[in-house]
Structure formats: C-alpha cells, structure tokens
Image (cartoon, rainbow, N blue to C red):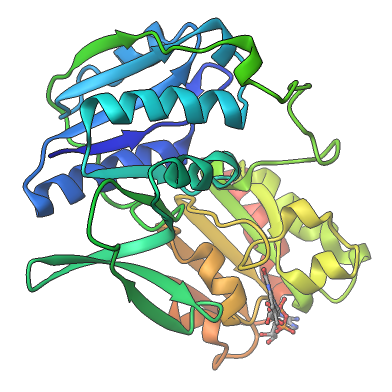
Length: 325
Ligand code: FAD
C-alpha cells in the first residue's frame, strides 16, 4: 500500500500546486504509514524527474510517450490507469488544477471510484481517514470518507498545504512506457488556452496586491498598480472590481475566481467576505489596508493598517521605491 502523487508540469517546470501536493502526499504517507511515490506524464521528463530524485520518495515514475507530449484527457487517463493498475497505490493525490478537473474524474471512474476533490485537510479517526472539504463558500467543513476499496482519488486545494515543506531524501527514477495508440486519443490539442493578453496564473504568483471596492473606480487603480510594481507583485482583485470591468475576470481571487497562495498578499480596500477569503487564506503573510477597523479581513491579516487607502497606498509605494526589495 502506498501514496501516489500525480505531479503537474508546464513549460518544462513543475507547477507550484504540484509541489504542495507532493508535501501533502508526504504528510499523508506519514499519517497512514505508507511509502510515497510520485508520477508525471509527458515527454522529455528527465530534467523534471531529476528534481524529484532528492525528495523523500520511494520512487518517481516518469511516464513518457510521444502521444503525451501535449496534454489530453484520453492520453493522461490511459497512461495513469496503466501505472495505477501496475503499482496499486492506496491513495492517489492530484493538485486541484484545471487539468486535474479535466481528467481525474474520468480516471477515477475507470476504477469505479469517485474523485474526492478540493480537499483542504484530513483527519484520522477510529482508524479511518476523513478528507476535509469546504462547503457553502467555506462556511462549513465536511469530513468525506471514501467508500471501502481502493484506490482513493483525492485532489488537494491550492494553498491548503503551502506551509508544509517537501521532505528531502532520495528517490529512484523509473521510466515507464505506457501502451498508447493514436486511436485512443480523440482530442486534437491546440495551443494552450490564453484567456486574454493579460491572462495570468495568480496561483503561481509569489506576491499579490489585491484591490477591492474601496478603490471606488477604475480611474484610481493606478495607485495600486504602482504599489504592485514597487513590490514586484501581480495585481489581483475582489469580485466587485472584476464585475465592474475595472480589471479582467482572470484577476479575481476567491471562490468563483482563483485560489492563490503567495508569500505576500496585500489586500487593499477589501472587506474580507468569506468568498474572497477562501481564495487567499493560504497566503503566508497577509497585509490588510482598510479604513474600517472592524472589517473581517483583519481576522486573517498578519499586519493591519487602519486608514484611508488613498493616503496609505501611495506612501507605501514611494517608501518601497526608495528601499527596493
Ligand atoms: P466591499 O465588501 O464593498 O468592501 C470594500 C471595503 O473597502 C470595505 O471594507 C471598506 O471599509 C473598505 N474601504 C472603502 N473605502 C476605503 C478607503 N478609502 N480606504 C480604505 N478602505 C476603504 N468575492 C470575491 O472577492 N471573490 C469571489 O470569488 C467571490 N465569489 C462569490 C461567489 C458568490 C456565489 C457570491 C454570492 C459572492 C461572491 N463574492 C466574491 C462576493 C463577496 O461576497 C463580496 O461581496 C466581495 O468579496 C466584496 O468585495 P470587496 O471587499 O471588494 O467590497
């Protein structure tokens, strides 16, 4: 019995949610007393696999085939199905990304199982492992128990395990060649989708400056853009800012936007509604600027500045420019 972590990569690099899932998998392995393996599908995986060779893993499976060069749900499902049938892991973990959402339920169905998705934690009770999922925009936590049998397929929410370090050690890398035929792959992948020219993957950003309705209008965004620039941060927003068209929808953080886990999250004029907080609570350090000292955002903030953002933000940007980080 083992834990298998399915890693995700893009452009020759591991995606950050994949590292978080690896750390989560190691933690799960320690809880369940099981060895942990990692797997990835694609082509030319040598360099990526090498980056896992010094992690505390029993084995790294590099599933390589020319038909896996571009992601397709059919190809990845077939490749991973073959590996899982061969090595029979007890738990299979994925980062809860768009790609996972695309193929992991299909993979789970091949085994007559479901995907326990977007998990934020787990609990061992009476010898059974319950997976914690958030319901009703994070207002309730539910413990989900997989039906008897194996494997159990689980996807891990971005940010939920961001603070857990990946344990180092050594791992053997094993190259796997799956049985794939061109007829098995029905989709013809095009170029990766770009939502817009400014499309951004906020889940990979190390620093984020997020702006809320407190900014009052699009014409005022310049001050937060300058703060973001001074910090070397990505610009993000709460939903009203995107709904009003002040910033594109791909900048929205929250339950109906992106889930982020940067090292630094500066919330400017954001009240801290639960739908926003579920998207950024994985940030390591949160700085909130709000004129209302009772604003809920201060409950999740490490540093709070109570005051008018129109005074504070330009002053902060000017100070940062003088002392660049
Ligand atoms: P407000 O709640 O209006 O807060 C503005 C804040 O700015 C206030 O705290 C105020 O004190 C402060 N402020 C005002 N002027 C100043 C000033 N001069 N200086 C300093 N501070 C000032 N929201 C999201 O963000 N992301 C989501 O993904 C999301 N999904 C949702 C999904 C559903 C199904 C629903 C129902 C709602 C969703 N929402 C989402 C909306 C969410 O409920 C809140 O309405 C929203 O987050 C509020 O945005 P805000 O904090 O920018 O605005």
